[in-house]
Amino acid sequence: EVIVVRDPAEAGAFVAAHIAEQVRSRPEFTLGVATGSTPLPVYEALRAEADRGTDFTRMSAFALDEYVGLPAGHPESYRAVVDREVTEPLGLDPARVHVPDGSAEGIRTAGERYEAALQEHGGVDLQLLGIGRTGHLGFNEPGSSFGSLTRVKTLTERTRIDNARFFASLDDVPVHCVTQGLGTILRARHLVLLAFGESKAEALAAAVEGPVSASMPGSAIQLHPRVTVVVDEGAASQLR
Ligand code: F6R
Image (cartoon, rainbow, N blue to C red; front, side, top):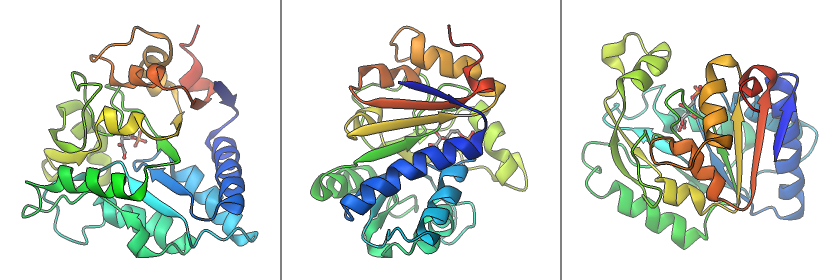
């Protein structure tokens, strides 16, 4: 299902209302969280839902990915972003918030441990996704296998340039990440893919309508039985 909304704020309100409704009927709901700019309006709207009385304190969260090698507590580490945008404002129990371990010491077993945690927990109910201009989901860049699980990957130069806006310089953007695989993402029970702006239009159209191919990781969503795509006019502009 593709839903075209006026702007990111409307998308955020729409998706957050759905999540809040689920959480009210099942407080132990598990949200798959993405980082980057795209999901921020959802988190803002979730905070508004919390202000209006939805209790998120028993919700669990699993992040899609993490940079490798940033010092603990670095403000742009995805652990810090998730804590700042989701865990703290919604009052989640930090013990229920999971982010892959991108520390140098943990890296050898980070993927395996994350998959085990996901499995033990019982998986993700709703996975929020953004899409990169390369078509990546999580940090599964073109060529990633549709069966892949959480593992260390190398970021493409284009993705590093796109993410340099969060860092002082391009040199400060990590080269590696730990990311859920496409196979991991496809196990979530409901995928919600968000995209805003014309810069995402080409990747979005290829993901939604193009051939299913490892060279367009976003096209993996076509293999999932329950996907909601929420986009603004700009991101929808290349859909047929
Ligand atoms: C973030 C992630 C990435 C982003 C994508 C889009 O956890 O895994 O796939 O969703 O790079 O980034 P933004 O939203 O910043 O355009």
